[in-house]
Amino acid sequence: MTEDYLMNTYKPDDVCFVRGEGIWLYDTNNKAYLDFLSGIAVTSLGHNFRPVNDAIKDQVDSLVHVSNLFKNKLANELAKKIGELINGITSDNEENNFADLDIDFGKVFFCNSGAEANECAIKLVRKIKGPKAHKIISMENSFHGRTLATLAATGQKSKQEPFEPLPADFVQVPYDNLTAVKNEIDSATAAVLVEPIQGEAGIIVPSADYLKGISEICKSNNVLLIVDEIQTGLGRCGAWFKFQDARIIPDVVTIAKSLGNGVPIGACWAKTEIADNFKPGDHGTTYGGQLLACRAALATLETLVSINAPVQANRLGDIIKSKLKVFPQITEVTGTGLLLGIKFDKLNAKEVQLNSLKHGLVVNAPRSDTVRIAPSYLINESDVDIFIEKFADAIADTKSSVE
Image 1 (cartoon, helix red, strand yellow):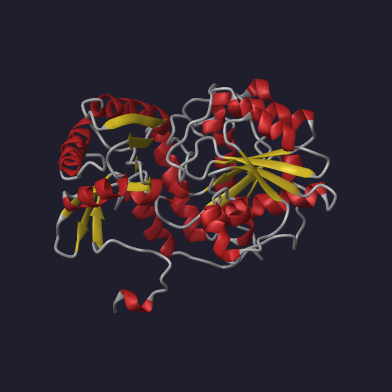
Image 2 (spheres, helix red, strand yellow):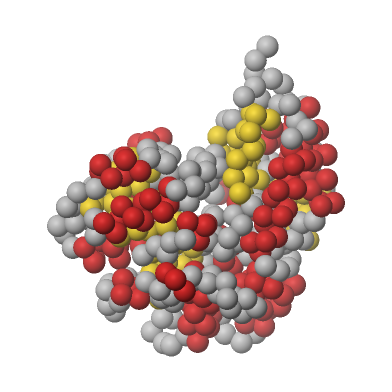
């Protein structure tokens, strides 16, 4: 079989990976590649991670799927764990919480992807507010998914244009601009949808008071706040969820990517009084919360807690940033934890990405001036040194765009 049988929705590199081990991938020729992308912040525990593998195998031998017509003990257990992490509570550090913010473990809807999690969030807030308050405010250059509704919420015109007209009443305002958010809110506004760090836009980090400011604006205007933590959540940016740095708890939080360490699963968490507005039949998905995906996610979260993923991400991210300072071609390194954007002004980042692959290094370039890295939390300093060596070779092979 060749790619001729696949729809032309991606433009893949010629490399085809057939196996993985830890932070290494191997292609059809058994060439090794250091994976510093993790399937775009998905395999945060690396490839072929034994505790997750064992949980999956055990569940396969027991029961993979029934349907949401029946009770699901694993899904309920996973939802409880997510609620604990939303509130900063882990099994080994009970005092690390937000008790001063009125703990609410909330409720969860499980689905299969980040886009579906955001779709659920949009439907939930629109049901709560009703037809008279239906507008969703999101940010320019944001990315929230590729369904029609989440595409309408995505602030990238190039992605929207081929599918217009899109669902109405989605508007975008400049990122990191509290005045713009405040000025756009009116009596027709249901919610504000925001990423704590914009990933697909090139790892854009807002001002320290941005999320807290949005939260206060939403509260004073009786507008709901949805925080998209699909790429930033579960420890990647140095907190269990990046909004925790702002000492807020949003009304709705969307989660995916790292949740299943590669097994497709997404989640939409909402405060209890918000979640309870959904009634049977309001929303659903055939595979959402299925036993296999939940078992994988439970094993993943157990490990993330045991290694203290946020601390790991911060420590290793700081090491990477320090070692990248030796490159004069790099103008800035943005991001926090292990979600970093490496910016150039005279090199084309997409060429750096391709040259990295030639040297056995997997990264990607969401923009022409930015290389994104999102390695596994299980890397060590020696792995960082290998990354720096391969990245140096890739940069050396990339010609300057300015003579």
